[in-house]
Amino acid sequence: MKWLNREINLCQRCNLSCPNCNRGLGEWREHWHEHPDDMTPEQVADFVNQARAAKAAGKIGIKRLKVVGGEPLVAKHFKEIYHLLVAAVDEGVIAKLKISTNCVEDIPEWAKGHPKVTWAKSPVRKKFHTPI
Figure 1 (cartoon, rainbow, N blue to C red):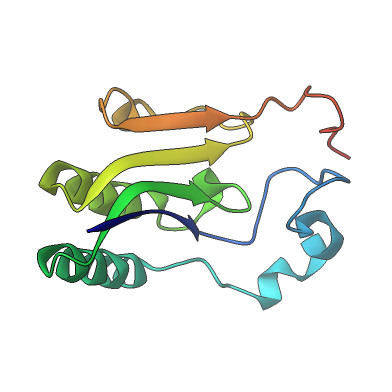
Figure 2: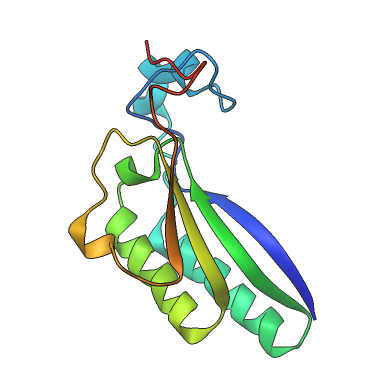
């Protein structure tokens, strides 16, 4: 079986507007209302089902799934999606879950403490990561 690292973008919105954003989110902040493109729980469930089928067939396993945005904590359905992904981790469909955040929002209490879920924080004060 081939083990892969994958990344999903939950939304294209962020609570900062950093000039060095590699996703260009600050450049079109005023147009977010025109692009309600947050991932839905159904889309994430579809991804998990495809990963489950691929693993069951002995083809592909998800070694690490990285959840990004924009800022994942501002995604409309973050709580529901988080629970879907944690269930997939508990089932063994995904080996590890990593959630990248910019540290502006606090990590919710209900999302803390799972041994196979890590939170990658990129501090706002990091060199060249200056919000506007």
